[in-house]
Length: 515
Ligand code: AHR
Image 1 (cartoon, rainbow, N blue to C red):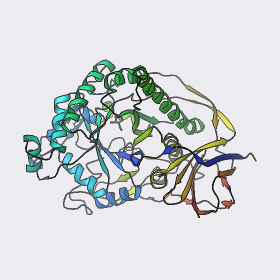
Image 2 (cartoon, protein in one colour):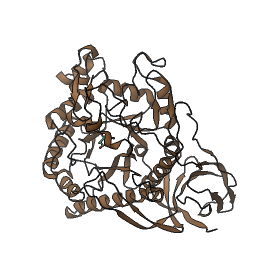
Image 3 (cartoon, rainbow, N blue to C red):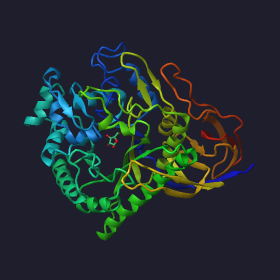
Image 4 (tube, protein in one colour):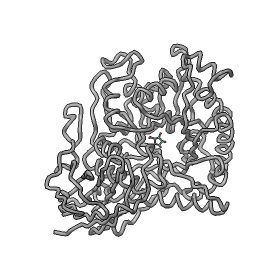
């Protein structure tokens, strides 16, 4: 049996996780909003139509910030359509998802829902079909206190107090040919800069994210970030990144290795952002907003062409059913985010309900947790604090991973993937140390030994494990608890040493309390 050994020290930290690292995403897409969080007439719906069963699961899951209203949807959206008396709101064709948008849910409803859920709202402006003027008007409608036409319009609509939305995305995936009015980096950089300027002139307190690449696979990756930041550096705080992992090749080891490409992507974007800063001799550091991340492939190709004809409203699209294997790859992504807490200070799981989501619902029926619900809950609930540097000595394996959704159709070689992927988070306030450990071996149990430098008098608080002999096991309406974490047995803590046994293909969370 081979060992995996980890060394860490209390004094050596990568950074502290920002509360916004644990965000998620609600898009006007399929049944994410309609039939997801909002379903007037549902037995659990409140007077505003918000499903309380879903809200309960959202509170349990613990996302901290919520991106809205898209995604691809935002590039054709008129924010004005979603405010004012619901009966007078227009029905429109949504070209992003070939659906009919009824606009019965809009910005004010979103803000109300966020407040109920205890989540910070994040809004995106349309830089596809629209530009700086619509963006600044949207900020004025939301955030200006009153005494102007747009702020008084909000008040007349029933929201007396300004929404105070701080975090705004300057469009979505503007590098992607699938985007409504996609742009070159030069054209996007110009409009993003001008939009950012006037949005901040309306509200100085805003924090803005420029669009980075839709994925590392994009032909324009690298050049895109550089050009966009050359235009926007002085006006934005963030650049965005998106990643969706896949297992099209039915190659589980490669799938579980692919989250390591997320580490590379982050480090490359940091390097580019810092090179733009260096050319300016600037001490400013652009932070990363990983505002779409997840596993997504089975339902990925049903966009546009495969969507039902007839412009349905809220069709059941992108309803990925997640397996144990997906939860493991997903857990690996959580570890990648934690281990870059110094520069990734915002991240949004895409998405929240029904659409590539940890929560599923039946319209008119129940709601349940998908497999990926569990690693996200661990990440969000237990990932608060100082992420410690770790030295992981683990056997490795070689993998080849493909992302056929991107324009570059080549395999990525991953020559030395450690079987163990790990992050350690020290919550000083609560006196907790939490280890997140993914065993990527499909058949080997690894005895894990961790040397916990600088800590003494540690006691085991809890240890959980998500694994299943059937990697394709999933939760469904009929078996909502088929996959859930169990306790991880035989964890020993003595002095500054922890020992545990990590089952093959397992996600493990071990939490220690400090005396
Ligand atoms: O999350 C689903 C879609 O994926 C989003 O609308 C888009 O931004 C990305 O391509």
